[in-house]
Length: 476
Ligand SMILES: N[C@H](CCC(=O)N[C@@H](CS)C(=O)NCCC(=O)O)C(=O)O
Ligand SMILES: [Mg+2]
Image (cartoon, rainbow, N blue to C red; front, side, top):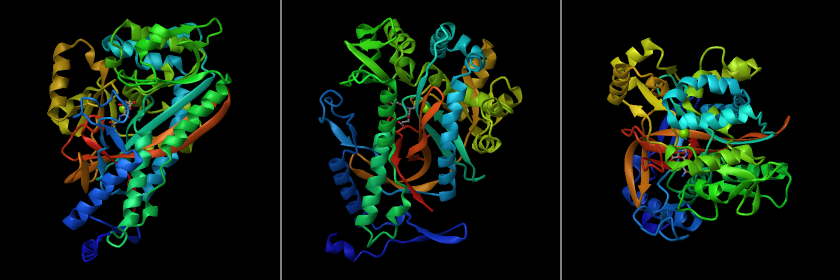
């Protein structure tokens, strides 16, 4: 570190009482500006060398030619402090949520019944349900089931409750980049240990990408055909993998149920697309989805896993006595219930009226994935009044959820090479991997984490959507 820095005063340590021990955490906004510049520079070099990169929206070549038009991923400069007790709680419920998704996925009647009114007013979810119905009609059994989930939480400041935002069962983003951010922060703290009094070991190890890859590989192994491939389904303009349209054009189903695409048998289909209406440009994509679902290939997710991850199912599972339908262990049920935020259908008129009066306390959610779809603040009131006026039953396309208010923290967000001091809130995602073959549970584990930090004034969260940055956690 340049000598000039060594004269910097030690970074303020903000003493905070956590439980009975005094822990020191650094307030990033107190860090000497010169030190911030050096931290930022070293962080950018690290990102460049270690592939903590994303496509650069400003470069027209980005996304077409490998390695061209990249920029460092939007990251926080230092990790976000997070209570160790809540970290442990989030890790502990991961395998229970994995098992719940699997049990729910096997209850076709529950899925169809819970989504029956949504089916009438939400064309996209209706198409998914049609594929699911077809599978029920042919009594399709998915013997090998693979789930690569991410359960997202916010820590409610007032109640200190860790509350689940949603459980993603399809295309759970950033297992790869999330691991790298933990390593970046550990390296920076190590490098600047003379100036920043933090312990790199308080950043939990994050092995999400390897654990996801291991689950995909083991699913391929369970399928049992060494010549068969693992196929990623992605949005167009990506390569070496397939879009839904290509699968329709190149895919076929053999008599024995083997899925063959472009002449190759497919053992595992891993969806990193197919979760949004925009992924289905025509009937071609829907035919591809059905073709894959009808096949023996292991789908990640299957149509049932996909439906089990809808907000409507999340809301139904939060109703009294519903978890008891799927899980036996009372302690497990209690652990899940403890992290359920308020969740209501729009049939509950008291709640709807309260949301019209106090819209800021609610989030209104359609059955959509991929970010940018939820309704906040005054827009909740307008949307509810509009639905009441229309009276077309379209309210079944939405759920209402308690708005969670996490603690506002100081953070320095790196965007396009520039550090920005911001007031932020964060959302912790815990990855879970689950692999089952008939009655054998081959994998059921917590598989790393993703911390996303965004400017506190922003309603939407997504990193890809450009609101949040990738972060890691510092246990306090
Ligand atoms: N391009 C697709 C993006 C897939 C996607 O949006 N996934 C949802 C869960 S469904 C998600 O994880 N959203 C949080 C990521 C963020 O904050 O931007 C991919 O990566 O496969
Ligand atoms: Mg989601």
